Figure 1 (cartoon, rainbow, N blue to C red):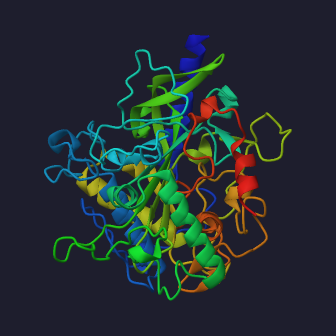
Figure 2: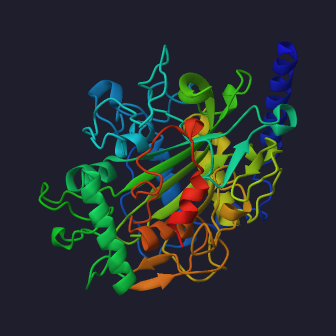
Figure 3: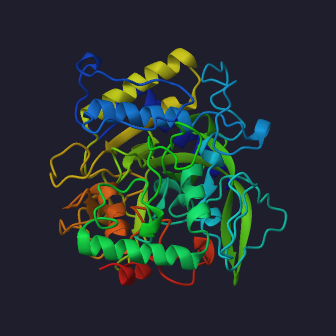
Length: 483
């Protein structure tokens, strides 16, 4: 049996590799125009861009996304300085023979959701070693629990579970997730509303003001650098000056990173960014932490800036996900079909996005032909919200983070009404009916006051346990909380 599994894994890796070699652009997309039709500003540097002009074109949006991607995937300085979230300026992508660093990348050292919202209501300084605090702590035993990748989510905000390689393994290779925030977002909460009771008051004030004035506070022009007297929840914006900080010191802006992972066999590892991670298994009434090898298959990067106060949403995925026999099990309409359902991408990747991926891959190969990031592509980018459902990346969704129709085709007022084109975003005094990732996150702004962040409200938070140990339905909790 073990030999058969190894052979199957080798066949699977070979199929993916052949597919990657044969396909110059992503399947289920429109034809890719020639590179010269687009003017990209993609650069490989360790510096996260902090702002983008307000009327950015699709070319400028995708360039911003790639510049972020390269910066957050830079080797971090953690092992040299003990500082989280900063790049090692002595490293570069010109690293012959090595597909990626063994040391943590910048985004890996961001704070996990349970560091941001620990169950004991006691946040630690950002630069401390990671400490994952739940109500029901898992059994650790001999597990390394200081790793930066803590894959404690096993579903897509309760809507569905996802499985990889279902043709060969049915439900044996579950996709897992984690969410992290950068220093600006973490320290905003730590320094402004460090206790749950303070945060709850600020969220209540914010949602009440939005309901009354379509603004975070009366007279607000935007949601950046909100005055302390307003007592509202208002995450930092990239490009804004830090109040009381050093002269001309600017925020990077609040950044959240959501990642999706699948278990990988040794034969697959050369094709994936792979880490030893923390996962969880429930045995009887106990949840056990364990260390396993997983490969990255999806990444959201969302970034709040002055010109884009409802965040810029960029999402990336492994180029082989549509050849990996993914299947979802829907959770929202139980009793559900327990057999993983195959699915297609509902909205094609725009040509300019695919062309930007080709351009970025050429830059990577010039720096390091072995770079692992040549196996990852951009799916799309959302800028400011709009009511125009034909606009660029309106229905933005990641194949392995928003898999079922509820999330992949979202354009509604809540998880209860995902397709009604209801108002789900407020920006500069106006309501918007936005689709895709931004529309879904906007629901948390309009109905919960948490500034487009799923991490900052009190729905299913603080976290009682990793998802493997849940006693309640996540989707039911969201349904009750949202109209």
